[in-house]
Image (tube, rainbow, N blue to C red; front, side, top):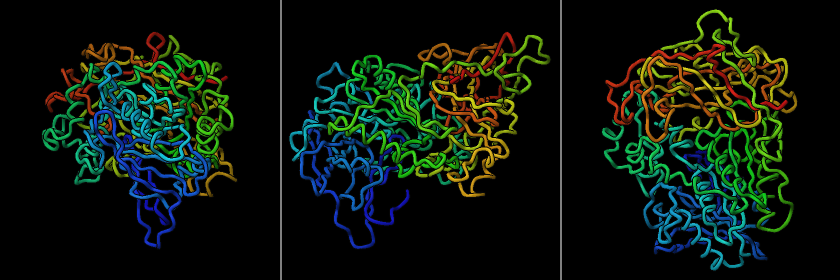
Length: 631
């Protein structure tokens, strides 16, 4: 966490649903607050009171709309003396800022269940949707000089509490912007990837949020390289047996429900969403290491019934919540061509959106989707998403390790597959070691853009590479992988990575000398850089059914469909396209024993063993990536 040099600032900490707001006292004499500060306890329908902070502009002269945010991470202790960067553009229009701790967090009463289950059929049920509804009812009646209009926004968990209002919005709620909200924790986003457990992230986040009501507590590893720590722990079952001892309810729920059962389907709140009930600005990051999937699902479900065209989505080349940082001029060492994408998003999209719906001024967006396209480093708008002109195009994996838009020929020589041995005892790390703890380390945020050369020479990673491109290839829309693969075991994972390989003379080809980095700043690092564009895992036991796992037939070629989400990227002329395939991704994904067991979370050390993995690349059994190419 970076301390501010001047004033008291609000700092967003981007953990799982992390919009942690903290305040820090300036060592100099305190400046005059720019907002009045009032802390109240708002009652909701079951008698619980929720700790809420209300901040009003000192110079307010007319009724203003309320901007409301609900968080599990703590409210500020006093008003800021400088306007936070993420509020600057909004504050210029005039808002009453309200921040509330969720039930069971800090001074808020009740129990924090870390749950997104909303039971619309039970009028007596309390959940994040009803708490938001009741709080808005209180705010519009009790906050002086408000104009009766409320907006909500937030990143991650704060985005989730925003999005949940779509299920039963208060009449005063006139606009929301859910940003990086999860929607189905078994299917994707924070905790799993199509049923494959995100072990290190899930474990560390559950400890952070449920081990102490009054703080965000980080697990103490006692070592910097968590790869080694998780490997020494062994099977997932040992984490609770040796360290948690049943003390973290959410972790227990994960272990007790390995498959997509009713527990997870109830948590998948988006399955109840079928209309755009409130104007909604969805926001997604293409390299969001936590919640890259949810905003697209909300956007798609709200699109089922959107007669007034109030359902919008914005996406950019951002890590989790980067669009709320001061500038957003790069991710990792990848620059955005001189653009300050975070500031531009807030100035050109977020502030005008709320201005139109809450102040009644400006214009309604005339697009459905807006993206900052990586590769070209340019903003784009689209009337529909995905754009109609995007043509699904197959990029084929060949048995000689090449990659091309031409299908394998019938007469190609050699074996029709490539193979490797996957050993759970020596898993492929998901980022370069040493792997620091997820929180509060800063390198977690940018691992999805890390140079993949660190695994290039491993015998358990297959690499397929194209020739240098003779023209730009623009990919806009959903990407997917279709592998034909087999394993000598009875269960397995396959991880697919789509990669943009920079030329060796990257500085000369790719930098605008006026807006690019200073000479020598990044040139050596980006020469030959292997930039991941899309990465995902599928777990073999769930290929037939998410509800009922099945063993894989050993050594039988099987089709693996692996969604790689929506993207907007240009593979520039002179670059190469690469695909990597592997079967472990540790410890962000738990190790598959590669021998079928009833529950991987109850596997013993004896269940784990190596397996020979084959990826088929023939005319009759082709493996390929589907790219939505713009002609």
